[in-house]
Image: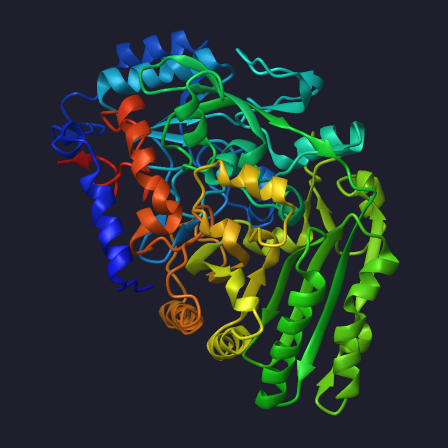
Length: 579
C-alpha cells in the first residue's frame, strides 16, 4: 500500500539515517553455497555432527501425500516443510541443505558457531508458521528447535537477577506450540497464558512478533507477558535475558521479529487468572441490497462501539462482496446470557427491517467453562470444531481448530493488514469507517479482527503491551483488518492457479479502499504483506531505531537475516549478499 505523507517518509529516512556509521558501511558479505569455494568439507560436517550428538543430517523431502499435507502436525514434524508452501512472486518452501535437530541450547550454540565460522546462511525454524517464509532458505543450515518442546508450569517464578517477588508463570521450550502451553496452564492448572489462537503456532515465533490471540482484548499481547528468555546470539553465547539482565535485548524479543536477534531456546511467561467462562457467537446475515448492506455495516459499527468494545469480546466480523456479514466472535469473562444480551440491540435492528435481511434467526451463542476450552474431550461433542491428529503415535490430546485446516500448507496469493484506529469509532467519524468498509468489501471479503487491536482492553494490559517493540498503533486500534487470499499447497513445485494474479489485485484494491479512512496506521509483522512498503515504520513505528541499535550490538554481521527483519536493509532478497 502507498504511504505518501511527508511525516512518514521523513521518519523512514530518519530510521535509515539513525543506523550507526559502522553498520551503514559494513563490509560486503557473500554467504557460501554448496559446491562453491569455502563450503565446508565432509570432515567439517562430521565435526559438527559430533558436536551436536549426532543430531545433524541432510534434509530430504518427505512424502507429499495429500492427506498428510492437510495435517499441520505432519508438516510441523518435517524439517523440509513449512506450514505455508509459499507466496505468489515472493517465496517457495525450500528445504535447507542440512539440519541440526537441536535438543539443547548447547546444540544451537554449536550450530551458530559453525555457521559463523564457515560463513553459511542460517535458517531458524520452530513450528514453521511464518507467512513471510522466514523459517526456510535453500542452501542453508537449518537450526530446528522443534524438539525443544517442553512446557513447565511454575506456581512461583523469579527471573534471574530480579529483586521482585515471584509470580505464577510457565516456561516453554523454543519449539513448543500454544496448544500444549494452554493444556498445561489452563486444562491442568486452571490458569491462563496469553498466546495465539491457532493451536499449532510456535510460542517463540508468536512472542517475537508481538503476538495476538483470541483473548488479547482482555490480556494484551503475548509478548507483554514475557518474563525471561534463554537465547543463543550470533557469537554463540547462551544468554538469559530479562528486565534485569540485558534488558535491551529482552525488550527487542518482545515483538522485534522472529529469527532476527538469535535463537530462542526457552521462554518464561507470566500467567493470569483464568476466566470462568469462554464462548462464541456466530451468525451470517444476508443483506438483500447494497443500500441495506451499508445500513447493516453502520448499525454494526454503532453496536460495536457501544456494546462490544471491551475486554470480553474478540475475533472477527467479515463483510463480503455478496452482501453478507459473517460474525465469528468469541468472548471471555461473561456467561452465555450476558453474551446474548450484548447482541440483542443489534438483532433488534435487523429484525425491525426483516424485509432487508435474512439469516439472523440462526445466530448461535455457545459457552463452556474456560478450563475446558483446550480440552479435546470437551470439544469433541461439538461437531466440526476440532480435528484430531490421528497419525500412529500421535498424542491423544493433539488437535487443531477445524477452521484453520484451510490454512495448512496453503500458497498465499496475497495478504495484507492494517490497524484500524479507535478514533474511527467516534460518532463524528463512523460514517467514514462505514463507507470505507463497504467500498473495500466490493472487491473482496474484509474481516476486522477485534482482538488484534487493544483499544477497549484494561489499562494494565495496554500499558504492558506498550512496553514492547510492537508498533504503538496496535494499542490505539480497535481492530486489525486482514485481507488475504490463498490456494492449495504447492510443495510439489506446481504453478499458481490462472486466476491468482487477478485475485491478488482484488485483495490490494480492497485494502486501498479501506485505507481511505486509515491511511497512516501500521501493519502487524506476523500477519502482513510480503511486499509491505515502508516496512520499518509499518511494523515498528518509532521503535525501529532502538531495534536497529540492539541488532547492531548483538549481530553486527547479520548472521540472522530474514525478509523485512530489523537490519535487513542492504541484504539481497535471498539473504546471501550484503553490500
